[in-house]
Length: 112
Image 1 (spheres, rainbow, N blue to C red):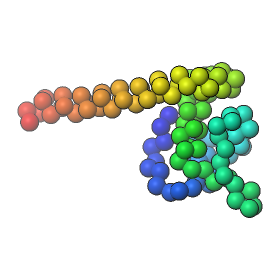
Image 2 (image 1 turned 135 degrees about the vertical axis):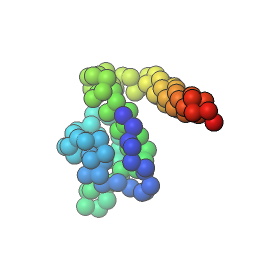
Image 3 (image 1 turned 90 degrees about the vertical axis):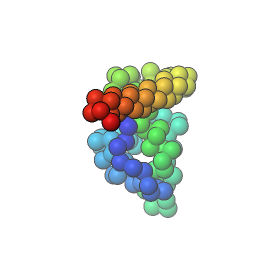
Image 4 (image 1 turned 120 degrees about the horizontal axis):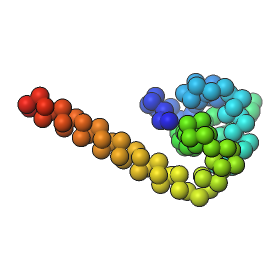
């Protein structure tokens, strides 16, 4: 999953992040306890403030657990091995290339 919303703010609340992923805030808090790389900052009240880096980490977790069906332990291992990051980058590059090729084909089909 890629967050479709443009990340323009410095910090996002847990409610905003939960809405981005269409999950409950409690699930995000739970993932925070299970994944060492997910450590949002907290203000004096204890409210979590998620940075773009935190949201990208959540994207990885969401993709592994919700989309690919990994267990939490399996997702932890996959993230630890860094193999997922390499494959994710490759997929993003291929999707970008595909969209560029489709646009080129559309231009050729329209005779431009």
